[in-house]
Image: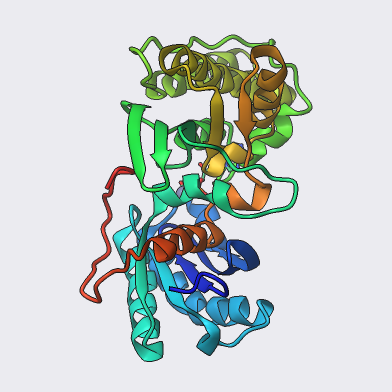
Length: 342
Ligand code: KG4
Ligand code: ZN
């Protein structure tokens, strides 16, 4: 098979972003993301509204991705799409669309695991970005997942540790909700934290075994702390927002860094990557950069646009599968639950 001129269209629709991307030989030609503003006022993603918005967005988003890439749909070699995990109604829109397009163009269809794709985004060829060697460890942190994954090759992954309750993105978003901030609150906590003092308030770190995580206790701790303070001063949040955000963020990032230190100790692997929406967080990016100097780790921090949900990561995963000759049957179905190892 010729591996010279390969154009892959990636389609992502697992949650509340409709995205399409064209990758040419591992390089991104386009990566169009339509965010769904509709959920902000509900304080979280409303599944029914998400699938309706995907239905409206998918045709123009795919068209735009192909146009921006400067090609026509007839140049495409394969269609890659997110099979799962995610919201079933959202996944079905992307899955059905990808199947029809692949059938219409008579080209291979490639299903992609969303969690693997977050990790495989590190293999997008970008100037100034290095690619991790095998084996490496990836801390996958998103709105639905918190995992430490060992990657032995592109398609062989092992979960070394994971959350036993909330995901770290949820910890950010639920804390933000307690502070009256709109969904998704993670980026807002990051923004206000940059103006605050991280040592102002102290929150208890959870005690959970080995390489696993737990965030539900922290969320409850923050809730009780805020309630207590507001009893004494109803304007407590308004007056201390930056310091509260900085302190919450500091605690969360400390938890993540502690687990990464344990992982390096246990595995002796010093190639450490981060992936997923929370890897957009400025503090974790800073701390990982510092770890290169302090602990001699080699760290891999994705470009900002490949952290939160995007189709470029689906397209690169599709490209790697294409080179491997791993295609899907047209009978493939969306799966709301899917492990990174499946
Ligand atoms: O990977 P992603 O886009 O979607 C999922 O697959 O879940 O991750 C979304 C999560 C949300 O919880 C959002 O608040 C969080 O990533 N997030 C951040 C930041 N940007 C996005 N959390 C903290 N700091 C950020 N800068
Ligand atoms: Zn994601």
